[in-house]
Figure 1 (tube, rainbow, N blue to C red):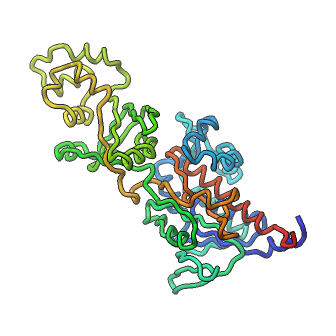
Figure 2 (figure 1 turned 180 degrees about the vertical axis):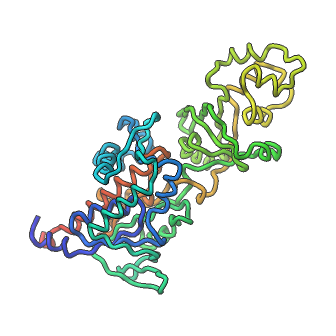
Figure 3 (figure 1 turned 45 degrees about the horizontal axis):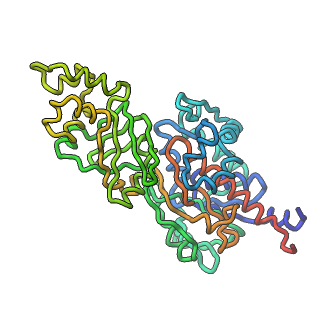
Length: 419
């Protein structure tokens, strides 16, 4: 590296726009290299969605083998592979340990901080960033550019800022109240940057419930089930887990895992059919044998409960999809218990989704995540065009892409102008 490029890096100012995990990681990479970093966010404080995501237990990453881990990213694997090889699950655990945040692997393979909380992690991280000289500018809503100068709306009016490079880490379009509004999409499109339309990911789906079923069972969990679904390419998804019945349909980790393919099928055909095994620990013949016994004076509800332990919302689902006479036919009844059809007709609105698909097209970026048509402007995190299920995959890719963008800025700043 030449002396001129070292000086350029040391004297440069870089703006990070967005205070989520990707933006904070880019800020860390740059500040530790001695670059002056100013981080801007529209909210009163950073990491709001990060803190919300950690309310039920901060799932940071996942410990499964790398090939399986990468498969969770679907069609974006090729773009994310080098980033995650450079900064994957093990590297994230080492990084957290350096922050003073110890982690453990849960029974499902998910990785959590020992405290199970996001707030201590964020506090330690922000402390280190401030010690490294990062300046935080809150309540600064990015408005785009004016002749290459960044525009922000602040409580005291509009301000314009000139910097040497920019990292955009503005998130997707879900949970707008926490700052991810997707308002950046038209700002980039106005600059000729290719941006795929934002769509809900890790979202619930609508089912046309009867008024009776919705009124009696909304808010109840469907536990210990097996969900199966065949996508448009004929690939079958089948996994155990649980769902939550809502007034509008279903949501929960099991449906989130298949949400991308379900969303695609609904867009193409108008609906998607999934099948629920309500009793995955019992084979069909066992159920038939148990339910073939005369129920005598028992109601059908008591018969199902006593003979096979099926009750509550599961019994309610059977009544929702079956005609009354089917309950008198043990074979047809058990066929449905083992493969109850559930027609999903629409994804829930984007602002209810945990994350979003769509975003800045990777073809618009170089391998360091710099916008090809806007040299010195980089993108990271959920505003890129990728998606993944919950389970630590979202955060891992945000951390990794923020790191790549930060390193990309360093490379950009350190180039010798004479070359």
